[in-house]
Image 1 (cartoon, rainbow, N blue to C red):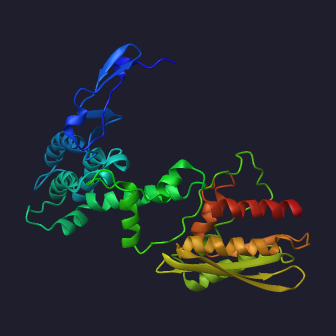
Image 2: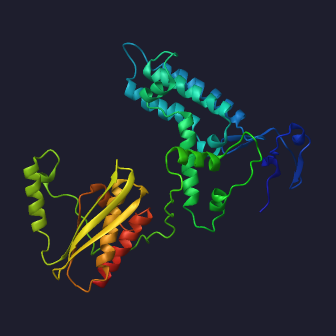
Image 3: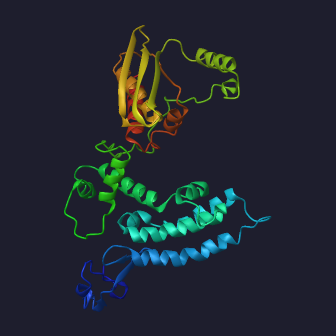
Length: 363
């Protein structure tokens, strides 16, 4: 494979402007002269990694779009606020945040402010608020997140994804390292992500490992069935008595001579200190109980999945050919699992399916 010299760009990352003068490379017989910036996949890099040129380019690109958005409004005609909000997020904000994970966490504060100004301009068009409106209420009314919050979110997300990789992965080693800062005013996703996690109260929280080996697409799931509907009487619009009777009838149709699992899980405010448990009635008449912690930062759905996994592990080695019936009040958890073994993208979902397949094979 030969490198196309005419398509090659050169950029020297340095804090001293004189270092970038006279940078020349010979690539496959073509002389490449270093410039003050480098354009790669829609992102413009500069020697200080401040992304000033990129932010200036975004402003020139977005301002006509904001003007077009303004032409869609009027006192007695035009798009409504909900429609303007959708267009602004897709047409204006979408252009501003293109590949933002690669540059926004590293951009200097003054250049992040340039992006913020364009978001505020779009928010004023959506809401009709004057320029004197405070930033936070304006963006909240327009349904547009601040560039500063997006910057922290992207940095924290990148950091957590890197920490979820195997220990020998180079990107994880970069995330765990703490080298000295070479560029004084440049932070990057590692430093900003750590500060964002501290601000969110998630300092020191262990990141769940990434699912490295998903279940194969042709995995047979035939003996395992999910039922998320107990009939018309189980709808939310029905009365409590109607829903209770529908549940009784549905449970009565299930095999009585079986091992029954009743699991439940929850988290404080739906996001913290999650845990769960289960009561197991075996086919032999034995009653078992399990409890499990789901993590310091955890959703209620995740707590439900942890409770179900703990119960399945408890009955996996039970020497009984009787069917297994597991009941949970989390529709979200059951919907996630009912997508199939190969559709699981989380470690906990894949672990539950592996346990279910193991139980089905033994019975």
